[in-house]
Length: 279
Image (tube, rainbow, N blue to C red; front, side, top):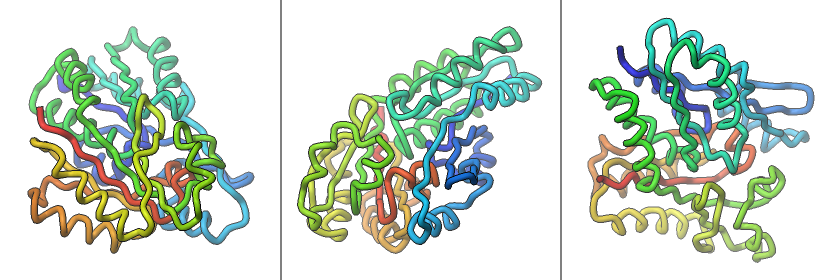
């Protein structure tokens, strides 16, 4: 039986791509006042960013419940006896804990391995994508889990933020707290370190931010895959992909849009690049 791969919506793997990969995505929740939506299921990215920018209610987010994972595990247990779950960083979300609690309730039905990726967005997504490919090729659960744990150290995310106010409001600013007092004209570039957001540098414009993301790639001698994702700036993402395709095969550059739950913390105009180093 093929190992079934499960992740959460903070992997930024779109529902369409998840279906193509054969990956099950458990959505987190975003709330505007009394209105609660499952991430990318009951609210689209376009609808979310319109409400974020033009609405007067600041959204909040919630992780999936153990019950959400139990439902997924029981469904998948009907067609496999091995499940690999790869979640967003446990520092940023309680999703990993929910997945673990659910495992303890249904592990008699099939073998379940849950891994805290310590990553977010496509730095998690690229790991899931490659794991799904390996599972389809016949890799077993132990082999896949070992590969994922090693790949975590090879997945590198850099994010251009137009502002840190959303990250601060959502309580996910982490080690970037010290940048809040910077001049408004300074745009931060963050990464994820030890499972939480951490500062890399600051630039003065979106164009400089795009340059920084592009110049991040040549620093790696061997690259397995790249990912480019945006919140509300598809033209900038297109330009970054165009430039990257001159130095890296375009078919190995994945595209995505920052999900509503992540967008709550990233805000509009965020642009991100992930490098998955080759082994």
